[in-house]
Structure formats: C-alpha cells, structure tokens
Length: 232
Image (cartoon, rainbow, N blue to C red):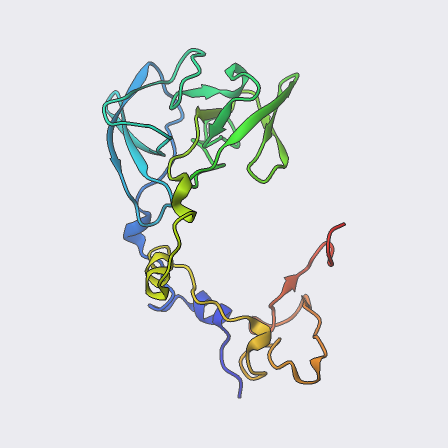
C-alpha cells in the first residue's frame, strides 16, 4: 500500500508543515487614504520576510512597509505632491520614467501588492495615455492604472544571497522560519511506492501531465498546462 505523498501531508496541515502564524503578523500594506507625511518609528527584522521592515506612523495610524535602502529611524516620508525621494508614496502618473519603485498597487487603494522582497525594485518604462508600463524584476513589462501608488526606491537587504549559507543546519532554520519545505526530494528519485513519478526503472519517463479527474495523491506535476516543453 502506497504512502501519502508530501503534497497530501502538507495539505492536511499537521504540526510538521503548519505555518508559524506569529511570524506573519505584519501586513505590508499602506492605508487606502494618505495625506501629508509620516514618520519612520522603527526598523526591525521579521522572520517571515526577506527584507527589514519599517514601522510608519501617520496621524494616529500605524502601518508597515518593506524598508528601502539607506532608510533611518525618525525619517519623514511624504504622501502628497510629486517629490521624487526614496520612501515617498506617490501615484504612478506623478513618477517620471526610469525611476526605481517597489510595493506597487494592483488596483488603486489596495495598499501595495507587487515587489516586496529584499533587494528588488521595478522601473517606470513608458506612459501611454492613462496606462503606466512598468518593467518588473523578471524583465517583463506590466501595465498599471495611472492612479495606482508605489514607493520610490529600492528595497533594502540586497546582499542577503551573497553570503554563503555554509552549514545545512543554518539553511534548515532559514527555511523553517518561513514554513518552507527543505530539503526537497525530487519526485523521480523516490521509490514507486512513495510518489507517482517514483522509480526510474528502465528509464522510461512518465507523463508529467496529470489527468483532470485524478485523485489528490495522483494529481502532481503539470496540472492542466496551457503548453509544455522548453520555450523557444
């Protein structure tokens, strides 16, 4: 009788695979309505996020954003006008082309959805009527509404991948804090009893496209793919 595969075990939500809720208590979004200016109260580390976080006070409201490069406690951040200064939260239509930005809104007022990881930033590429085209870190262009807001600057923590991990134990704790599965065993290296792709006997690769009506233990690999193969 076959075992439950890792996908099933994680979906069940046992203590082995459950997320640490305490680590994810900071919501990195700014309020729908901002005016005047805010103050950086505190810079701190969060186990669930790759970048350092900044605690911002605006009137009597507190919110959190990923810290930008060279940010310091006590710094003033502007929410109005067109001043291009790191940390300012401005509408895309007021930001000139080639400016570095992050934490971009998907729809006006949603508080920032795109680009929140350490060292990342996007760039305003071109403006066509009411549409702003932004060059994402993936080098792909994405269209945004001109009333969407973004933070000027580059997210701090750029060099986090430069330092080698060295010890497997350190990698274990890094992944565990974010509830990531590590080390990950490749499915084709498992025994046939442990995974649908298991056992490479006779080296005949099995199809990685799961049938649409496949049960949970069988539904692995490419699920209803639009296309397969290497993109040319």
